[in-house]
Length: 175
Image (cartoon, rainbow, N blue to C red; front, side, top):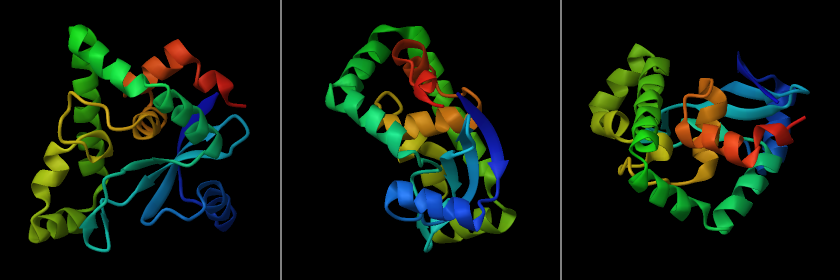
């Protein structure tokens, strides 16, 4: 079970996230999803970190979920999903909408000053053309972790994340 939230991380939550990841995510802005016990599962990260584009808008912070999704990746699921995307026009359309949602959410989360800085640095196309996890080719799947973090954070706005729940029961593994 998970809950979508919008919480500024407390000192304790920052420490817990750093413990889970082995470091605190640079540019962390807010917690976007928690499990049934209130433990952070995903965070939102600033678009620019040290004046450089940061590709991961939503970052999966649960060591447990990272491990589960890594097992699926190691078993070849990304290639299988890419094949399915090519064979299933409805899934591909939903996946394209996932990228569109990601881009829109990222722009909406930025302050006017951040948007202006992005324009000044010449990165506007990076943020308007790159989808989930910073991927350029919206017909490929870069990694399950970024897809699932977007899914948790957007309220089921990610086709791959929803598929992971529907077919692999990922959300059902959470407390």
